[in-house]
Image (cartoon, rainbow, N blue to C red):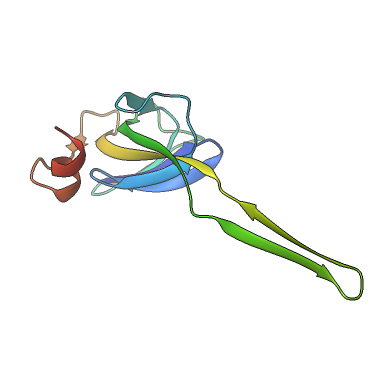
Length: 121
């Protein structure tokens, strides 16, 4: 089973065991987050939300807060000036641990998966 969730105005397709990099959240590293804005649940019986699927939620664990790689922006106008700027975006890494569709069907992360062994201790 998979789902489409909205986090900070962006939509992400998630499955149990996925690691997502999203815009920085205010939660502490190691805490769990319940994402209530589930737009779609896919699988054997797909559920489409109007605008969200009622009762559905996705549970995730905050792995870390970090900054992405540096992006260089170079502005140049012929004969006038040159300007070199850099930007690093803050992000939060989330591990999707559970998807609940609201009808009693729950998909959890496999305990033998690589991500579970690395981040769930």
